[in-house]
Amino acid sequence: MILENVTSEINSFISNISVTEASNTIYPLVFFVVGIVIYSIFVFKFYKFISRRDIFRLTKGYDTSKLKKIAYALEYIFLFPIIAFFWFLIMSSLIAMLSEVVAIENVFMISIVTIATIRITAAIPTIIDVLTRCLE
Image (tube, rainbow, N blue to C red; front, side, top):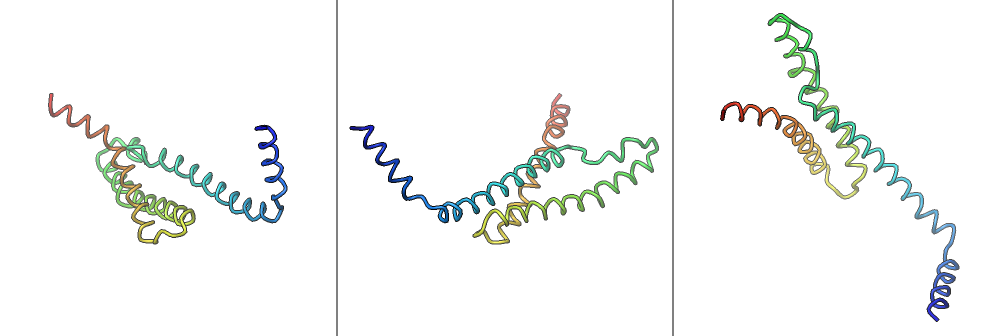
C-alpha cells in the first residue's frame, strides 16, 4: 500500500517534468553556483592576502633608517591604499552581482566594513602582544 503510493507519486512527478521548465531552472542555478564559487575563491584569497599583518615586505631588506622610512612611506601611504581600493572594488562588484535588491550604498558599506574588520583582526595579535608587555 505505502509502496504503491510512493511509486504513483514518483510516476506523477516524472510525468510532469518538461525539458523547457528544467532548462529555465538550470540556467540560473548554474549562473548562481558559478558566481558563488568565484566569490568564495575570491574571499579565500582576499582574506589570506589582506589578513597578513605585513602585506608588503619592502622594509625588510633595508638596513639604513632613511631607506626604511622611505620604504615604509611607500608601503602604507601609496601602495596599501591602492591595493585596498582595488580589493574594495572587486568585492563590491561581486556582492552587487550576487544580490539583486541591495542598494549600492549598502553594498559599498558591506565591502568597506568587511575590509576594515579583516585588517583590524589582523592587528589583534600585535595589540595583544603590546598589551601583555605593558602589563608585565
